[in-house]
Length: 347
Ligand SMILES: [Cu+2]
Image (cartoon, rainbow, N blue to C red; front, side):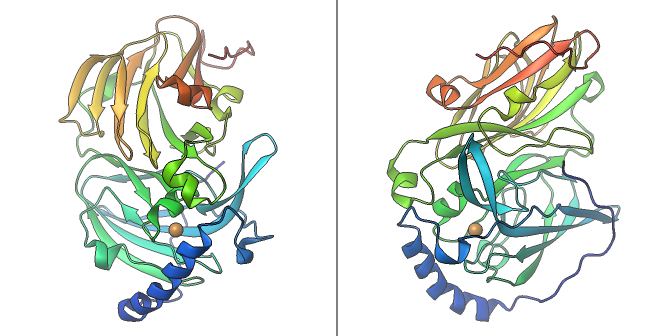
């Protein structure tokens, strides 16, 4: 379970020098691209399984947060017995959810613990200069950046190091929520909320399969908004083995984000109709009465619905080839909102 660490010390070991990094990047990127044409674990990653390091997010002012993340190599069991040596943020794939407020300034630190490959961060939630603010951090180095987060919504983040497809498909993706200044118009109606992320997995570190293949698995994960919430990796069955829970009659909000890298999502919850949908999570983009929400690669939404009866509600992408490859979760609705131990239906 991920914890919000409230210790106000972020240790910065080195400040990145752009010119030096850019020239170093060039040769490294070529090596990376070469390595990624094979489906083998690259040599420096063999026997490397870095334990997840919790996200550090510390509020340092009314409108300012310090966020420290790691790029690291961590094993993730996608299906039983199928271990993927993922390239991750903080040892999770998708990475931990980040929550900030509209109008915050983000002081961001990326510590690259990968001994061999540069990594970087591209936040879709901010205005930035990609060539200056989303640059590569060399192996075993740390970089610092500052961005304003002035747009509310549910946004993707990902590593932007070349080849970008390899870095995203190997696991370097996640979700950042920028909470609207005045909340959503429906704020007072919500009884409980969850974060669900959809992503795809392909043959291990195989750029050819990433480009021209079809996903081996498409999966959902849940990301914890507060301590005690369910927090999983994108693995087959993650949200069937441990269903999300709600109480009959409640209004449920899901922050949903499709991090791809390649496929769209047709997000649907069986047995209900979305009362309210905010496309990309912006309060301005309100739609009502939707059955399915189309999420482009990187796209997000806030969906809200009421669960009127007890039972198990499958959460799917209605592209059922993808649901059959793993993108199914269960929302279990009970009398009192706790797990009554009944079997969660598979869809
Ligand atoms: Cu990367």
